[in-house]
Length: 343
Image (cartoon, rainbow, N blue to C red; front, side, top):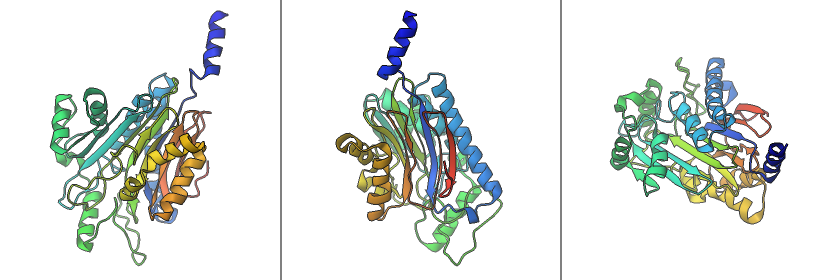
């Protein structure tokens, strides 16, 4: 009887939180009319697999950090998404990868940028957070650190996919920077080459996860291959703490996807948290204020996934579509791609 009373007191005091998780796989010009049934099925299955991978950890009492890392790794290993295996190519024909992870409990964070040989960048980002005195490592230094930490190193050819390579060739021919996939003009027909990798219009390719565990701890993780045809070791918002990735137990956990330059200038992820902390806005109101109003006014496109300290989920985006999925505090499962995918 005493144990039951203690358990009830813990629940009522918030010592045991209601678990929740949300993931994304990029946003942009993703429309139903130009996506084949086979493509749509593949993406929904990929999202579901990553979602369940993270949620199973939370169900077993695991940490939010373990959950977001596992979910992101699942998408890093899936060539449908622009992160690690299947990442887009730079102007020089390389794959340069960025990743970040953050703990809402203590505001610790780890990030890496511009790496070319790490099989799962999100794992090294976490090692930076936990096993170094730093927040961000880049390029060769990050790779050397990963080796010392025992992370898996692969030949750069591991990341290659023909669809991404062909996307670079089109971008080079057009002599303009593309975001994830080639930017088809209205005069062009959608390119369907048989590949399941989505190849229509602009798509801002990033993967991310946010979660709340039973102990009330929030975490966020983001990983990306960046822009097709990017130059000069460009780094986007994904590994920038407060821009594309942020977590704070007092408010929420955020992972963003979109035109990184706008997200960096807007300090987008932190802005959602700040609106909640200083203005008392709900997660839904704060995230929609930032994505649907502020970002639009500044000319930015994309979206974010968010979970707050109470297990509420928000998935706003101002683009045509966003690969997204969630399991909220009630256990409700949602998987969406297009604007008209309702909860």
